[in-house]
Length: 393
Image (cartoon, rainbow, N blue to C red; front, top):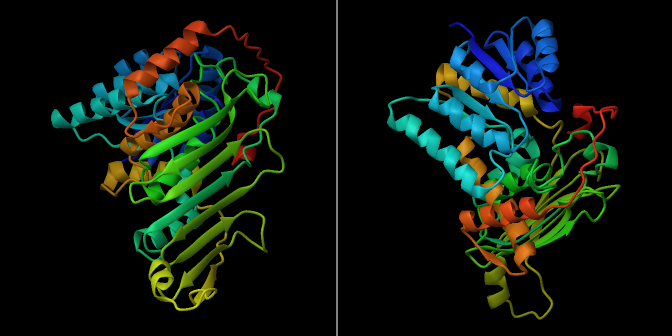
Protein backbone atom coordinates (compact mmCIF):
# COMPACT_ATOMS: atom_id res chain seq x y z
CA UNK A 1 0.00 0.00 0.00
CA UNK A 2 1.35 3.41 -0.99
CA UNK A 3 2.12 5.96 1.74
CA UNK A 4 -0.47 8.66 2.37
CA UNK A 5 0.31 11.96 0.68
CA UNK A 6 0.30 14.55 3.45
CA UNK A 7 0.82 18.31 3.78
CA UNK A 8 1.55 20.51 6.79
CA UNK A 9 -0.16 23.90 7.08
CA UNK A 10 1.77 26.14 9.48
CA UNK A 11 5.55 25.74 9.76
CA UNK A 12 6.13 27.21 13.19
CA UNK A 13 7.61 25.44 16.19
CA UNK A 14 5.15 22.55 16.30
CA UNK A 15 4.78 22.32 12.52
CA UNK A 16 8.52 21.80 12.23
CA UNK A 17 8.28 18.93 14.72
CA UNK A 18 5.55 17.33 12.61
CA UNK A 19 7.78 17.54 9.52
CA UNK A 20 10.52 15.63 11.33
CA UNK A 21 8.05 12.97 12.48
CA UNK A 22 6.62 12.56 8.98
CA UNK A 23 10.13 11.89 7.72
CA UNK A 24 10.53 9.12 10.32
CA UNK A 25 7.23 7.54 9.19
CA UNK A 26 8.13 7.43 5.51
CA UNK A 27 6.66 3.94 5.04
CA UNK A 28 3.21 5.32 5.89
CA UNK A 29 3.41 9.05 5.11
CA UNK A 30 4.86 10.97 2.18
CA UNK A 31 5.22 14.74 2.55
CA UNK A 32 4.09 16.41 -0.67
CA UNK A 33 3.57 20.03 0.42
CA UNK A 34 4.12 22.61 3.13
CA UNK A 35 2.33 25.89 3.65
CA UNK A 36 3.10 28.97 5.70
CA UNK A 37 1.95 32.58 5.52
CA UNK A 38 5.65 33.54 5.52
CA UNK A 39 6.79 32.34 2.09
CA UNK A 40 10.44 32.03 3.15
CA UNK A 41 9.51 29.53 5.86
CA UNK A 42 7.57 27.39 3.43
CA UNK A 43 10.33 27.55 0.83
CA UNK A 44 13.05 26.58 3.31
CA UNK A 45 11.00 23.62 4.53
CA UNK A 46 10.17 22.57 0.97
CA UNK A 47 13.84 22.64 0.02
CA UNK A 48 14.77 20.62 3.10
CA UNK A 49 12.11 17.93 2.59
CA UNK A 50 11.80 17.94 -1.20
CA UNK A 51 8.17 18.97 -1.57
CA UNK A 52 5.99 21.80 -2.89
CA UNK A 53 5.72 25.14 -1.07
CA UNK A 54 2.60 27.27 -0.65
CA UNK A 55 1.97 30.55 1.16
CA UNK A 56 -1.84 30.28 1.06
CA UNK A 57 -3.76 27.34 2.48
CA UNK A 58 -6.60 27.79 0.00
CA UNK A 59 -4.18 27.36 -2.89
CA UNK A 60 -2.77 24.19 -1.35
CA UNK A 61 -6.21 22.71 -0.79
CA UNK A 62 -7.33 23.53 -4.34
CA UNK A 63 -4.20 21.94 -5.81
CA UNK A 64 -5.07 18.46 -4.44
CA UNK A 65 -1.42 17.50 -4.10
CA UNK A 66 -2.16 15.54 -0.93
CA UNK A 67 -4.77 13.32 0.71
CA UNK A 68 -4.37 14.52 4.29
CA UNK A 69 -3.34 17.71 6.06
CA UNK A 70 -1.93 18.61 9.46
CA UNK A 71 -3.10 22.01 10.69
CA UNK A 72 -0.53 23.59 13.01
CA UNK A 73 -1.33 27.28 12.62
CA UNK A 74 -2.28 29.87 15.25
CA UNK A 75 -5.45 28.82 17.05
CA UNK A 76 -8.22 30.70 15.26
CA UNK A 77 -7.15 29.23 11.92
CA UNK A 78 -7.69 25.68 13.19
CA UNK A 79 -11.40 26.20 12.58
CA UNK A 80 -11.03 28.11 9.32
CA UNK A 81 -8.61 25.72 7.65
CA UNK A 82 -10.16 22.65 9.28
CA UNK A 83 -13.55 23.39 7.76
CA UNK A 84 -12.01 24.19 4.38
CA UNK A 85 -10.02 20.94 4.37
CA UNK A 86 -13.00 18.80 5.40
CA UNK A 87 -15.21 20.49 2.82
CA UNK A 88 -12.57 19.71 0.18
CA UNK A 89 -12.48 16.01 1.12
CA UNK A 90 -9.21 15.76 3.02
CA UNK A 91 -8.29 13.72 6.08
CA UNK A 92 -7.45 16.21 8.85
CA UNK A 93 -5.20 16.15 11.90
CA UNK A 94 -5.66 19.40 13.80
CA UNK A 95 -3.37 20.71 16.50
CA UNK A 96 -4.72 21.51 19.95
CA UNK A 97 -6.98 23.25 20.74
CA UNK A 98 -9.28 22.19 17.92
CA UNK A 99 -10.79 25.71 18.12
CA UNK A 100 -10.53 28.79 20.31
CA UNK A 101 -14.09 28.63 21.62
CA UNK A 102 -16.99 26.21 21.80
CA UNK A 103 -19.07 27.81 19.05
CA UNK A 104 -16.19 27.49 16.59
CA UNK A 105 -15.49 23.92 17.72
CA UNK A 106 -19.11 23.05 17.01
CA UNK A 107 -18.81 24.60 13.53
CA UNK A 108 -15.70 22.53 12.84
CA UNK A 109 -17.34 19.32 14.04
CA UNK A 110 -20.43 20.14 11.97
CA UNK A 111 -18.23 20.30 8.85
CA UNK A 112 -16.98 16.80 9.69
CA UNK A 113 -20.56 15.59 10.10
CA UNK A 114 -21.48 17.10 6.73
CA UNK A 115 -18.59 15.27 5.06
CA UNK A 116 -19.87 12.01 6.49
CA UNK A 117 -23.41 12.65 5.29
CA UNK A 118 -22.01 13.17 1.78
CA UNK A 119 -20.80 9.59 1.94
CA UNK A 120 -17.19 10.53 2.56
CA UNK A 121 -15.15 8.92 5.31
CA UNK A 122 -12.51 11.44 6.36
CA UNK A 123 -10.29 10.63 9.32
CA UNK A 124 -10.54 13.59 11.69
CA UNK A 125 -8.08 13.57 14.59
CA UNK A 126 -6.69 15.96 17.19
CA UNK A 127 -3.11 16.21 18.42
CA UNK A 128 -3.66 15.29 22.06
CA UNK A 129 -0.27 13.65 22.41
CA UNK A 130 -0.44 13.29 26.19
CA UNK A 131 -3.07 10.60 25.76
CA UNK A 132 -0.12 8.38 24.82
CA UNK A 133 1.51 8.79 28.26
CA UNK A 134 1.32 5.39 29.95
CA UNK A 135 0.68 6.94 33.37
CA UNK A 136 -2.50 8.67 32.23
CA UNK A 137 -3.60 5.59 30.34
CA UNK A 138 -3.22 3.53 33.51
CA UNK A 139 -5.18 6.05 35.61
CA UNK A 140 -7.96 6.02 33.03
CA UNK A 141 -7.98 2.23 32.99
CA UNK A 142 -8.37 2.08 36.77
CA UNK A 143 -11.29 4.53 36.64
CA UNK A 144 -12.96 2.98 33.59
CA UNK A 145 -12.75 -0.54 35.03
CA UNK A 146 -14.31 0.61 38.30
CA UNK A 147 -11.28 -0.15 40.47
CA UNK A 148 -11.79 3.12 42.38
CA UNK A 149 -15.55 2.81 42.50
CA UNK A 150 -17.52 6.01 42.00
CA UNK A 151 -15.28 9.09 42.05
CA UNK A 152 -15.65 11.34 45.10
CA UNK A 153 -12.90 13.95 44.63
CA UNK A 154 -10.48 15.08 41.94
CA UNK A 155 -7.45 17.31 42.57
CA UNK A 156 -4.97 18.32 39.88
CA UNK A 157 -2.16 20.79 40.49
CA UNK A 158 -0.41 21.21 37.15
CA UNK A 159 1.93 24.19 37.45
CA UNK A 160 4.99 22.82 35.63
CA UNK A 161 4.13 24.81 32.49
CA UNK A 162 6.52 27.64 33.42
CA UNK A 163 7.07 30.15 30.62
CA UNK A 164 9.32 33.23 30.53
CA UNK A 165 8.51 36.65 29.09
CA UNK A 166 10.69 35.63 26.13
CA UNK A 167 8.22 32.87 25.28
CA UNK A 168 5.32 35.29 25.06
CA UNK A 169 7.16 37.78 22.83
CA UNK A 170 8.41 35.03 20.50
CA UNK A 171 5.27 35.34 18.30
CA UNK A 172 3.13 38.35 17.48
CA UNK A 173 -0.14 36.39 17.89
CA UNK A 174 0.65 34.74 21.21
CA UNK A 175 -1.03 35.73 24.51
CA UNK A 176 -3.59 38.09 22.95
CA UNK A 177 -7.37 37.77 22.75
CA UNK A 178 -7.34 38.45 19.00
CA UNK A 179 -4.35 36.23 18.17
CA UNK A 180 -4.53 33.28 20.55
CA UNK A 181 -7.90 33.62 22.24
CA UNK A 182 -6.60 32.75 25.68
CA UNK A 183 -3.56 31.78 27.71
CA UNK A 184 -2.53 28.81 29.81
CA UNK A 185 -5.96 27.15 29.60
CA UNK A 186 -6.13 27.16 25.83
CA UNK A 187 -2.46 26.63 25.06
CA UNK A 188 -0.57 24.53 27.62
CA UNK A 189 -3.31 23.17 29.86
CA UNK A 190 -5.68 22.20 27.11
CA UNK A 191 -3.77 18.90 27.28
CA UNK A 192 -4.60 18.45 30.95
CA UNK A 193 -8.21 19.52 30.48
CA UNK A 194 -8.50 16.90 27.76
CA UNK A 195 -7.00 14.27 30.05
CA UNK A 196 -9.24 15.36 32.92
CA UNK A 197 -12.44 14.82 30.94
CA UNK A 198 -11.00 11.68 29.26
CA UNK A 199 -10.39 10.12 32.66
CA UNK A 200 -13.18 11.56 34.84
CA UNK A 201 -15.85 12.76 32.44
CA UNK A 202 -17.25 16.27 32.23
CA UNK A 203 -18.27 18.21 35.34
CA UNK A 204 -21.72 19.72 35.59
CA UNK A 205 -20.60 23.04 37.10
CA UNK A 206 -17.41 25.12 36.94
CA UNK A 207 -16.34 28.08 39.04
CA UNK A 208 -13.15 29.64 37.72
CA UNK A 209 -10.73 32.18 39.16
CA UNK A 210 -8.28 33.26 36.47
CA UNK A 211 -5.35 35.63 36.96
CA UNK A 212 -5.12 37.80 33.85
CA UNK A 213 -1.50 38.76 33.17
CA UNK A 214 -0.62 38.01 36.78
CA UNK A 215 2.95 36.88 36.12
CA UNK A 216 3.65 38.18 32.61
CA UNK A 217 3.03 41.27 30.49
CA UNK A 218 0.12 39.65 28.62
CA UNK A 219 -3.63 40.25 28.36
CA UNK A 220 -4.75 36.63 28.84
CA UNK A 221 -4.77 34.24 31.80
CA UNK A 222 -1.51 32.82 33.16
CA UNK A 223 -2.82 31.42 36.47
CA UNK A 224 -6.04 29.55 37.21
CA UNK A 225 -7.79 27.96 40.17
CA UNK A 226 -11.09 26.27 39.35
CA UNK A 227 -13.68 24.43 41.41
CA UNK A 228 -15.60 21.61 39.72
CA UNK A 229 -18.81 19.77 40.56
CA UNK A 230 -19.70 16.45 38.90
CA UNK A 231 -23.15 14.97 38.24
CA UNK A 232 -22.69 12.27 40.91
CA UNK A 233 -21.79 14.83 43.60
CA UNK A 234 -18.01 14.49 43.29
CA UNK A 235 -15.99 17.69 43.53
CA UNK A 236 -12.71 18.78 42.04
CA UNK A 237 -10.01 21.41 42.14
CA UNK A 238 -7.90 22.30 39.10
CA UNK A 239 -4.89 24.60 39.53
CA UNK A 240 -2.47 25.70 36.83
CA UNK A 241 0.06 28.44 36.14
CA UNK A 242 2.84 29.45 33.77
CA UNK A 243 4.42 31.61 36.46
CA UNK A 244 5.56 29.08 39.07
CA UNK A 245 8.97 27.41 39.28
CA UNK A 246 9.66 24.78 40.26
CA UNK A 247 6.27 23.56 39.13
CA UNK A 248 4.15 20.69 40.38
CA UNK A 249 2.28 17.94 38.58
CA UNK A 250 0.13 16.09 41.09
CA UNK A 251 -3.05 14.31 40.08
CA UNK A 252 -5.04 12.74 42.91
CA UNK A 253 -8.31 10.86 42.47
CA UNK A 254 -10.37 9.59 45.38
CA UNK A 255 -13.13 7.07 44.87
CA UNK A 256 -15.36 4.92 47.04
CA UNK A 257 -12.75 2.15 46.85
CA UNK A 258 -9.49 4.03 47.25
CA UNK A 259 -7.07 6.59 45.91
CA UNK A 260 -4.76 7.04 42.92
CA UNK A 261 -1.83 9.48 43.10
CA UNK A 262 0.40 10.48 40.23
CA UNK A 263 3.12 12.98 41.00
CA UNK A 264 6.23 13.93 39.07
CA UNK A 265 9.53 14.15 40.89
CA UNK A 266 8.83 11.70 43.71
CA UNK A 267 10.71 8.45 44.07
CA UNK A 268 13.19 6.98 41.60
CA UNK A 269 10.87 7.24 38.58
CA UNK A 270 7.47 8.33 37.39
CA UNK A 271 5.55 6.03 39.69
CA UNK A 272 1.80 5.77 40.00
CA UNK A 273 0.44 4.70 43.40
CA UNK A 274 -2.93 3.03 43.89
CA UNK A 275 -4.25 2.53 47.43
CA UNK A 276 -7.26 0.19 47.37
CA UNK A 277 -9.63 -0.26 50.31
CA UNK A 278 -10.89 -3.77 50.95
CA UNK A 279 -14.45 -2.52 51.33
CA UNK A 280 -16.42 0.46 50.11
CA UNK A 281 -15.54 3.58 52.10
CA UNK A 282 -19.18 4.81 52.33
CA UNK A 283 -20.26 1.33 53.41
CA UNK A 284 -17.52 1.16 56.07
CA UNK A 285 -18.53 4.63 57.24
CA UNK A 286 -22.12 3.46 57.76
CA UNK A 287 -21.43 0.08 59.34
CA UNK A 288 -18.32 0.44 61.50
CA UNK A 289 -18.84 0.48 65.29
CA UNK A 290 -15.45 2.11 65.92
CA UNK A 291 -15.19 5.90 66.17
CA UNK A 292 -11.63 6.08 64.80
CA UNK A 293 -11.30 2.94 62.71
CA UNK A 294 -10.43 3.10 59.03
CA UNK A 295 -11.16 0.59 56.28
CA UNK A 296 -8.28 -1.84 55.70
CA UNK A 297 -6.34 -1.16 52.52
CA UNK A 298 -3.46 -2.38 50.43
CA UNK A 299 -1.18 -0.43 48.14
CA UNK A 300 0.39 -1.12 44.78
CA UNK A 301 2.89 1.02 42.87
CA UNK A 302 3.05 0.89 39.09
CA UNK A 303 6.58 1.76 37.90
CA UNK A 304 6.17 3.45 34.53
CA UNK A 305 9.06 4.39 32.24
CA UNK A 306 8.92 7.07 29.59
CA UNK A 307 6.07 9.22 28.37
CA UNK A 308 4.73 7.13 25.50
CA UNK A 309 5.05 7.92 21.82
CA UNK A 310 3.68 11.47 22.12
CA UNK A 311 3.33 13.43 18.83
CA UNK A 312 4.88 10.70 16.71
CA UNK A 313 2.49 8.07 18.09
CA UNK A 314 -0.58 10.22 17.43
CA UNK A 315 0.67 10.92 13.90
CA UNK A 316 1.31 7.25 13.18
CA UNK A 317 -2.12 6.41 14.61
CA UNK A 318 -3.63 8.98 12.22
CA UNK A 319 -1.90 7.25 9.32
CA UNK A 320 -3.00 3.80 10.50
CA UNK A 321 -6.59 5.02 10.81
CA UNK A 322 -6.51 6.12 7.16
CA UNK A 323 -4.69 3.03 5.87
CA UNK A 324 -6.25 0.31 8.01
CA UNK A 325 -9.22 1.80 9.88
CA UNK A 326 -7.68 1.49 13.35
CA UNK A 327 -9.42 3.49 16.12
CA UNK A 328 -8.09 6.97 16.75
CA UNK A 329 -6.25 7.82 19.96
CA UNK A 330 -7.87 11.27 19.92
CA UNK A 331 -10.93 11.74 17.69
CA UNK A 332 -11.17 15.47 16.99
CA UNK A 333 -14.81 15.64 18.11
CA UNK A 334 -13.59 14.92 21.65
CA UNK A 335 -11.56 18.13 21.48
CA UNK A 336 -14.80 20.02 22.08
CA UNK A 337 -14.68 19.08 25.76
CA UNK A 338 -11.32 20.65 26.61
CA UNK A 339 -12.29 23.83 24.75
CA UNK A 340 -15.56 23.97 26.70
CA UNK A 341 -13.79 23.53 30.03
CA UNK A 342 -11.25 26.25 29.21
CA UNK A 343 -14.01 28.60 28.07
CA UNK A 344 -16.12 27.88 31.16
CA UNK A 345 -13.27 28.66 33.58
CA UNK A 346 -12.58 31.96 31.84
CA UNK A 347 -16.26 32.86 31.43
CA UNK A 348 -16.86 32.22 35.13
CA UNK A 349 -14.00 34.59 35.95
CA UNK A 350 -15.33 37.30 33.65
CA UNK A 351 -18.91 37.06 34.93
CA UNK A 352 -18.08 36.36 38.58
CA UNK A 353 -20.52 33.45 38.59
CA UNK A 354 -20.40 29.68 38.43
CA UNK A 355 -21.04 28.24 34.97
CA UNK A 356 -23.43 25.33 34.56
CA UNK A 357 -22.44 22.99 31.73
CA UNK A 358 -23.11 22.69 28.88
CA UNK A 359 -21.71 26.17 28.34
CA UNK A 360 -23.65 28.65 26.21
CA UNK A 361 -21.14 28.79 23.37
CA UNK A 362 -22.73 31.80 21.71
CA UNK A 363 -22.62 33.80 24.94
CA UNK A 364 -18.93 33.07 25.42
CA UNK A 365 -18.19 33.93 21.80
CA UNK A 366 -19.83 37.34 22.32
CA UNK A 367 -17.74 37.90 25.45
CA UNK A 368 -14.56 37.00 23.61
CA UNK A 369 -15.45 39.37 20.79
CA UNK A 370 -16.00 42.11 23.42
CA UNK A 371 -12.53 41.45 24.86
CA UNK A 372 -11.02 41.74 21.41
CA UNK A 373 -12.94 44.91 20.54
CA UNK A 374 -12.09 46.70 23.79
CA UNK A 375 -8.46 45.57 24.06
CA UNK A 376 -5.88 48.33 24.48
CA UNK A 377 -3.01 45.88 24.93
CA UNK A 378 0.12 46.70 22.93
CA UNK A 379 1.76 43.47 21.81
CA UNK A 380 5.56 43.36 21.73
CA UNK A 381 7.24 40.62 19.74
CA UNK A 382 10.84 39.75 18.93
CA UNK A 383 12.43 37.41 16.43
CA UNK A 384 15.64 36.78 18.38
CA UNK A 385 14.13 34.43 20.98
CA UNK A 386 15.55 30.94 21.22
CA UNK A 387 12.75 28.36 21.05
CA UNK A 388 13.36 24.64 21.60
CA UNK A 389 9.99 22.98 21.12
CA UNK A 390 11.23 19.68 22.62
CA UNK A 391 11.98 21.46 25.91
CA UNK A 392 8.26 22.14 26.38
CA UNK A 393 7.28 18.47 26.64
